[in-house]
Image (cartoon, rainbow, N blue to C red; front, side, top):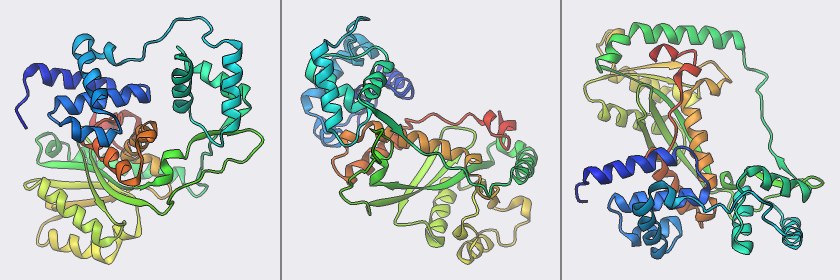
Length: 353
C-alpha cells in the first residue's frame, strides 16, 4: 500500500470522527466506503464487503472530495409534512404487512418510494406508533449482584491502579480490561419493532452461526486487541494471553476480567505459574484481578462490545451471510470505529484520568 499524503491522513481522521458519532446507516456505509478507498483498498475489494457497486464508491468519494462530510450526508427536504395522505396510508399498509421492522428499513422505504427523508427521527416513531407497532426490548437485572461487594472490589482496583501508576505512566506496565464477546447471527435483528398485539417472532437462517472473540482494551488509550477463537475455554484464553505478551515484550501486564471458570481453571493457573516463575509478585509478567460476580457493567470493554454491536446492527442490510457479518465486525474493530469508554464513569479506574 502506498504511503499516504498529509491531506489524505487528515481526510481519514475527519471520516473517523464523523463515523464515531453514529450517523445514519446509509451515511455510515458511504463513509466506510470512502475511508477504505482513501486507505488504498481497491473498489473490487470494498464492493462485496459493503454490498455496494463500484459506482457507489466512486460517486461518494467524489462528493466527499468536493464537499467533505456534507457531501456524504442525506439531502433533507425541509420542515413541512413530507407525506401526502395517500403516501402515508400506503406506508402504514406496508408496515402492517411486515412481520418485523427497524427504523433504517423504514427510512429506506420512504426514500425509495417517495424520495422523502424526515428531518427528525420522531416522525418515523410516529408512523410506527400509528401502525400500532411498539419497540420490544427487555433489560435484565441480575438479583445476585452484591452492590457492597462491587464497591469493595472497586476500592481494591483503585489501590492496584495507584500502586502501579508510576509504571503505567512510564509505560513499563500496561493495564487491560479483558472479556470475550460472542457474535451470533441473531445479533443483527435482536432489537426491532413489532406489533403491539403480537409477540415478535424472528426467523433466522442459521441460529447456530457463532463466533467468539477475545478482546483486551488498553485502559490508557483506545487500543483494542482482538482474536477470534472457536469458543471461550482455558486453552484459548492462554493462547490469547500469549499474544498479549508478544504485543508487550518488555512490559508487565495487569488484567481485569470476570470470574469465568476458564479464567481461573487449571490450564490458566499452570500458565501463570510458568510465565511468572521465579519472579516476585511486584514483577510478575501477568497479574490478574477479578471483577465482582454478576456485575459485567463494571468492565469498560462491555461498553465497547455494545458500541460495536450497535454499529453492526446499523449495517445489517449489508450482511448477506454470516461471513460478511464477521468481516464487517472486524473492520469496525480494525479502524477503531467505536467510542472509547469514559473512565470517569468507572469507579475502579477513574483515577487514571
